[in-house]
Image 1: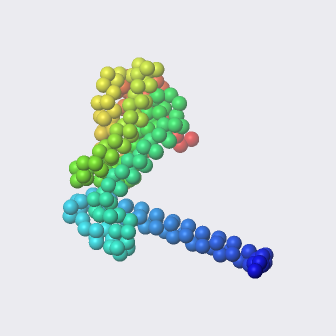
Image 2: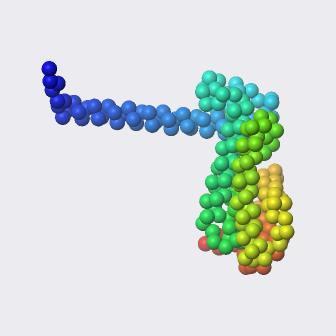
Image 3: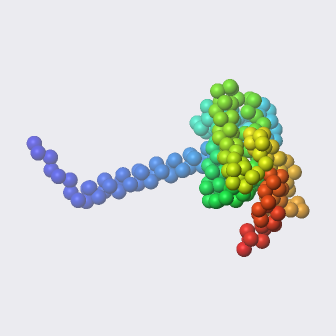
Length: 234
């Protein structure tokens, strides 16, 4: 028996149902992603303030406004949650650092762009950045190596800038790895004392540190000694 062709009305109704189902699935994915990010954010603050070992998954759930089961839907364990914070934070820093540098031209412009990003990120995302640094020893060796590899990739962005500056501008970088580590450590520690209501705005601090580093590298260019806050706000 030959099946009759579907009418245009039935075909349109089927298409509408498929579109509605797709939109519903998209909304669920967006909501699940938002929940996962909220859990990660509150866990970062709790780990930072209370310590990793002193924080329970129940406390994370309560702070995130979800049930404990919802936390375990996204993360298999507390260590998995810690790994996610550390790994994804480093991924974000690599992407952000590369994007900032990619918009710059000269080595000194790249250095300022990198430091501006690094200082701003580690201050504004202080909890995630601190947890990614301070609790690596808690992770199992395989997970720790994965995060350390990303951290090395991030510092490599800075080392490449230093190499370019040494070649093109005569920067004093006799030990690039050590200097890169020193610069990152110095700028990262701003988050320990910076206060939004303090004497200097974050933009002013970024500008000062960038000029300080350039002078330490022996850069004699105009951006090394010039306060660029006015040009930034122009």
